[in-house]
Length: 285
Ligand SMILES: [Zn+2]
Ligand SMILES: [Zn+2]
Image 1 (cartoon, rainbow, N blue to C red):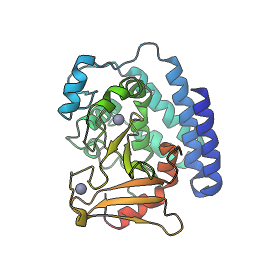
Image 2 (cartoon, rainbow, N blue to C red):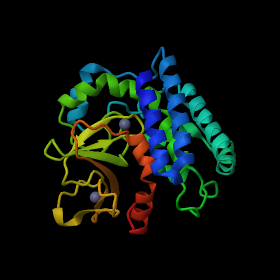
Image 3 (cartoon, protein in one colour):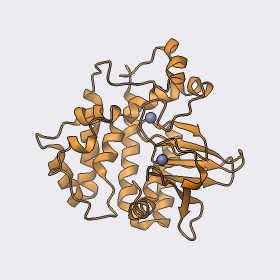
């Protein structure tokens, strides 16, 4: 595990050289990964558990393994982790970090409510963070740190589940566009050239990666080739944006020409923020 962390931190340093404009965010990510690892190491009693006999049924029915609606979990630890993540931002990017501090310490801000809502997407989590608490998107290059931290806050605990039950999930034929472990929608994925161009989607909330059809929108299920497209930036063709002209959503995809190649999608997601900006500009969400 420590080797994985070391490798990830090395990857981040490499990316900082090629994408200096994202150095601050990549530094934040490096600190997140260190904190995440510490959390992982300290888990003695995981918060989440799965009844093994229910797995195949859940997978067949399109139900993620972890569902926050039915059970009451003690989320003290993830909540503390969330506030520790905010402290990283305050240290690394003081201006942005202070704004963030004010938002998350406002009495209207309810971490647990927002987190639970992300599992049951109605009402929309944007409506829960009241609109006057949200910063207008004036700086388009800015990553929404709150969203990043909220997603990250459950990551150590959900990773335990993803790693333990990943093999069982692979045996099922999960064909949904949302995560089979936690139900979150993906923002990024990868395509492996050597394996008939298999596309995998990645979940930031639990770190799970699952196989998904190439010619299909993960968000609305559209399979009509003529309304599915992609674009890339010149000189950077190995990263592309898959878009659906039916629901106007998009996902970033990293193309790997060598099937043995490993890519860290946490790092890639930050290093490809300019693609998010392009997608927004083109009217995709
Ligand atoms: Zn997930
Ligand atoms: Zn769609």
